[in-house]
Amino acid sequence: MNSTTRVAREILEFFETGGSGRYLILGHKEPDGDCVASQLALSHFLKRLGRKTVVLSEGPFDRPEISDYKNQFKDTLDKNTLKNGDRAVVVDCSTSDRIGEFKTVTEKCDTLVIDHHSSGREFGNLRYIDTKAPSVTYIIQLIIESMGYKPDKYESELLLFGLCTDTGFFRHVEKGGGEIMHAAARLAENGASFKLAYRMMYGNRELAARKLLGWNLIRTESYKGNSILVTYETLEDREKYPEAGRGADELYRLLQMVKGVEVVAFVREETKDKCSVGLRSREGIDVGKLAAQFGGGGHRLASGFDMPGKIEDVKGKILEILVKTLRKHSL
Image (cartoon, rainbow, N blue to C red; front, side, top):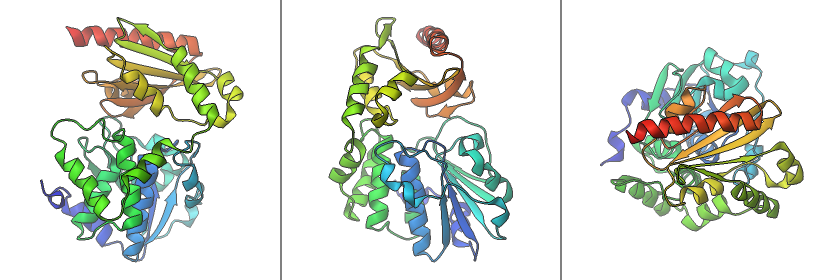
């Protein structure tokens, strides 16, 4: 498939007709590699075109793979400084609530939303949503190429990093994913390194993170013959291992390889009365739809949301929901 045929003309015109206004490039709270790389690569490309950009994020940047990028983002913007002609681009965000305080920017500017999540609440007056895209960086690459350019070395490194992040270094690429691999090859031809992308994803880890991972694995509870795996992390854990940072990608990766597993749930205690819940599915269960029921979002096979309640109560509710969902799926 020719990648340059996939981007609608109105999307390209959004970037080609920017005039003298700025592009305010937004991502979701608690950004991951795909979000950060999409924002920075798009900003760098637009600057090559002579556009003015501002890259915004509330953070936090406590995932080790993105911590070095923190200083390239602004975490505040006075809405009164918005100028005529300013445009907003929101990447990797299925609902405006996930933007945080920068949501007001999208209410005052023409806004393009670029995303690949399967669930969420629509916002923005122009949308480029491709739920089959493996990452938002993949979409950014298609936009750049559709405008007649090649990503430069810096952009290619970011785009490959984001692509590798959301595909689990390609282990989530499904049958028929040849174009994804061709896109990655084009980035490599432009100077990106798979070795560097892997080191960015899995390097820079503290020993404390490995110890905390061990506890998360030890606590894992199995239900329905390993069909459902549930584990958790407490506030006390993070007090004991403050250097560990956030991010549970390796935990999910290890648990999803357990024989017979259908879905993995990771409950993290955020406060004494609120938890975040991460869900990962192997194949059949659409956890994106499950997350949407609780105001969250995500992909068919990966999603998350917040739930009020103490950690034991939240674990119980999640298990009850997953058992019911698994029962319906097996009928």
